[in-house]
Length: 91
Image 1 (spheres, rainbow, N blue to C red):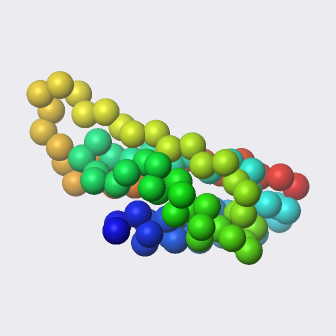
Image 2 (image 1 turned 90 degrees about the horizontal axis):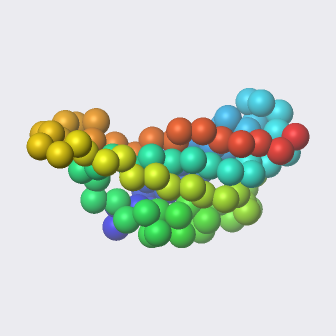
């Protein structure tokens, strides 16, 4: 299950941002899944919630967007990525 490792990395990254900014917690995480990624958005969100338990990220809303590959375009390595786009914090 690829989602587990990716989710752990996302939670870790969001937590680092929150701590660096002096936030009390992460309210929202926006994540982008590349068009050629085999990551399931629902599974990823569930895994993020699981990994966030007991951390500054616990309870954060996870918004997952899948990038769309333009018609006729050839996927590149970037289209396989999962990226943390933004983190909304509560101070």
